Length: 262
Length: 161
Length: 119
Image (tube, rainbow over all chains, first blue to last red; front, top):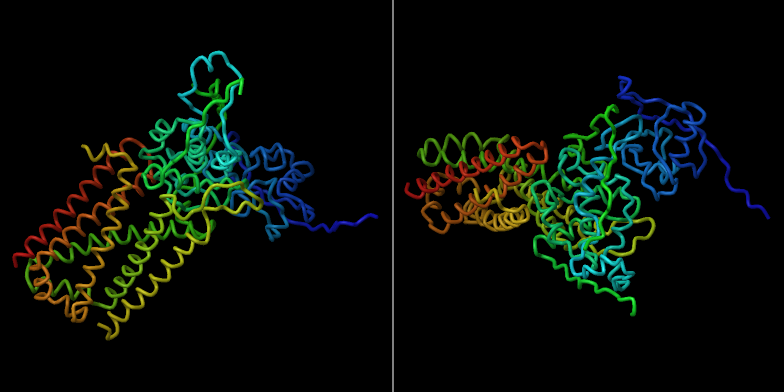
């Protein structure tokens, strides 16, 4: 038996920020009337406008399922993923799309992530382990670290970061401080600090414990309130501050290697 | 050792593409309305902090009239013991109470205490750090600031000693 | 200057500690205005204030409040200004200016305390 789903459609107004700095085009909003259903996402609506009204509309997107982190933009005043935001949940007849705040603007809704990625790279976001014998590294033997599920739980949520930049665009410090690494990079610093395969804590602490480092975070919590993946960057950053100031201890036991024979 | 990325990140906007900084600037932190109570707390902590520093400098200048004798002290008191001066002092009482209580909350939270522990995130991904336990500290700070201002008002405008 | 070489986490420890200490000392300071058996206005009369300044414990308390709040307040100001603009000139200038202002306020307040205690 067929169960008829609600096919009710309604018209909404999509206001999209438009600009092209290479054509001396002054910023303005273009309005599109789009028919939407209960489950239409903002990305669907934008692609509808791009397909049937104005093909020059600049948007960046890929997976359409909140996995790639490409379609971040400011929707009705808050940074959100366009593919993860249903129009029906916004409860508004007019949907306003702006480029992500705090990112350099290229064209329309497309922003430049160069600086954002540079901040991420600066905190050395990879496992460093000086205890692994050099011959193991050189011979590229298939070995693995021993980790319990409890060990994994200590950093797992932070490793779900998709680098969509929503936290970076919501952060009040990033709004004015160009040298501040931002919530994404700092939460990744915690992710590796909490990982018991990693021994890079001293080096990473040196990088973040400086004038424009982790202490420029004042727990405004905006990063965590916009994160679409439950990473909760503010949690990682405050836990890291606790370790830095010596109030909480990072009591991880460095993981040992499992040999081939084991 | 080090499992490091083996190539440089070459992403660049290229030589000819022109871009414009999209930073929100001062307006970014002056607008506390969009992201919940923690953002309001951040905004108020800053504003009250700056306000209290200005008051502190003014208070030291005000008190320095003491060294010039009773007449200088009394004329300085006349300047401050006005309705406007009392209202200003009420704001200082409110600001200092909020800044103190919220400041204590921030010392705990920024040291990783009271903000929860990492775990496996589940939809709808409510952030552990934005829990009601620490958030209630903001409300308590606001409540105590109001009570302190009411008491201060009674001392300055009423007959409470 | 050694102070400039402090790590930011050490500066923040000082920031937190001066803040906590200031709360207790300011509370006592306020008690001298409203909890000494006289009204707020009475406690501000010249001879009553001078009498406070002759109490060595109160004088020490005032000096500690002066030092703690100056450090806490001016470091807070430094943080706000650092976050506003980033270039070497601005950062060095505000660090020096904020330190100078802090020392200036402490010196000016100490002068009042010393002269006041001798009135």
